[in-house]
Amino acid sequence: MPPLWIDHSLWILNGHLRLLSTVRWSKAPGQEQFIEIDNTVDDIVLRLQEVLLQAPHGPLRMDGLEVHVGSPWIKYDIVPWQEGLRKPGDWADYARIIMGQHFDTDAMGWHVTVSEGDYGESRVAASIDEVLYQAILSFAKSQRLQIRAFDTALFATANMFADKLVAPEFALVVLEQKHTSYAFHRDGVWQGVGSFPMRSEQPDGSQLAALLRDAAMLSSNPLPKQVYLSSYSRMPRELQSMAGFTPSWLGLSFPQEITAR
Image 1 (cartoon, rainbow, N blue to C red):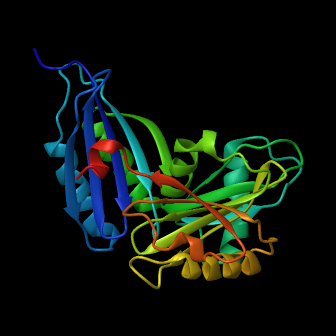
Image 2: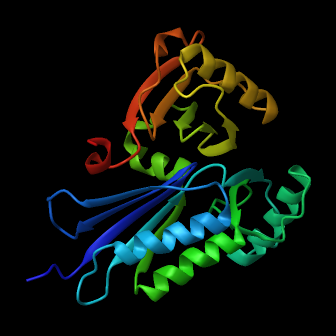
């Protein structure tokens, strides 16, 4: 008898797509698809259709899909508190204006989401190309997949290791594919978020320390001593060379089925 439900996890990273399909409530390894892509929206859309069509499906057509998108497809910003914004759409419109100014471009073609927060606090905004976002929704609907999460690779990692992010002030650094994303956390909120192209395929501790200093300067954040690190490929080299920081390796950001490749 075929499984009734399949859960799919999709990663869209620089240069490739990965889709992991697992039977719900099963401990058996999942089925993985790995496909290289050109860094264009058109090619991502084409390849995305291929992997979803080839994915296994349960007969009830009630399968779930979690989507994780990384750099360079995601842009981040911190938007200050604005009185009178009550609905998510109001915050998204406001963030789109702020992000367009910060990135010196027209952000009207971006799909923007803004994190929830307490009254008076700044919030994290993340954007993705609207065409890519709508294509993902359309393909999911055509395959009768229920989107259970749509997250950035950075904050998917933060959620995965939330129980380990215990320092009062810290920086989270996530090595994606040829990009490094970072987020500073202080006073209970994210204070600065962004992404840099990586200068090395496998950066060492001194290179990561230099990146953090640049990130702190650009985002006007003080440098925390505690740094939490994760990666979508491999553990960084020579973490002990992060002079001035206390690095802690969280682990790889992919599930065990993928990281055991």
